[in-house]
Length: 203
Image (cartoon, helix red, strand yellow):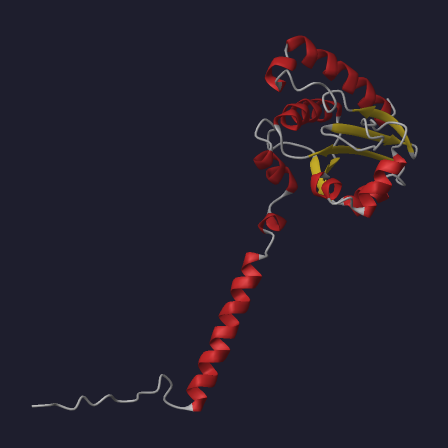
């Protein structure tokens, strides 16, 4: 005996208003997902804590303040400023530790930190303007192109470049930072920075 199977045509939404409400809720949830995904969670973290998280050899008691390319370019017109150019790698980690220790001992309360890697890779216009400003200091590679390398420390005093240090930015990578920064090298660099910072402070 053949039985007829009755299939009910049930609607997902009971009425149009319910459908509208669900679509609105979906749109809100979708917007929240996009918004939260694009949030910069570092914006509420103090710069010194953020820096110590990024560079684990540097203590939270550090003097580093994050800046972007435009901020950095404007710093060259200031009477005084100290800028560390870098990005996350071991060479910057070791160098920043030394810089911070000397800065704290000498009474320097702020060093600007500019992570230039993305801007360099994209040939950002402001970054290129910074390179042009530092033209006589930045190294030239075989192709004739000039770029900043990490780590590089620049001290601006009386609106001019008073100190430029990229010693470990352009050296051969046949040696690790652990090997390079032995007791003698650390002491030598600290002495060099002490003189530079004292001159910056006018003492």
